[in-house]
Amino acid sequence: MHSILLVDDEPEILAAWRLILESEGYEVGCASNGVEAVARAVARVPTLIVTDWMMPLMDGAELCRRLKAMPALADVPILLHTAVPPIEGADKNWDVCLRKPVGAKLFLTTVAQLCKQRH
Image (cartoon, rainbow, N blue to C red; front, top):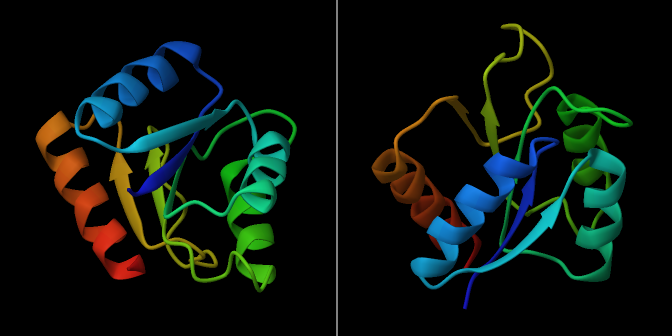
């Protein structure tokens, strides 16, 4: 079973996507910021990380940098799910960026493709 770590500072978004992903058979963990996400990912390496860009404590840019710098997590695909996309030309330490709001069909298709990459 594929495991997904959802990272977003908005509890409603975490709850909604968790419900959708679990109904599709994914195992889902949640974190409300980058600091919590790093700790969870180190404790149990997920198949995929889905993260917001704008968050308190540690934003998505720093989270992506830290994850890619860790050998155990460097190969874990990252799906950026954000209302404010990163500036073009910024270090691209993620695999795919989907702009909020995104439809469930596109989100699930993208998640499935990224999970297949990993295994």
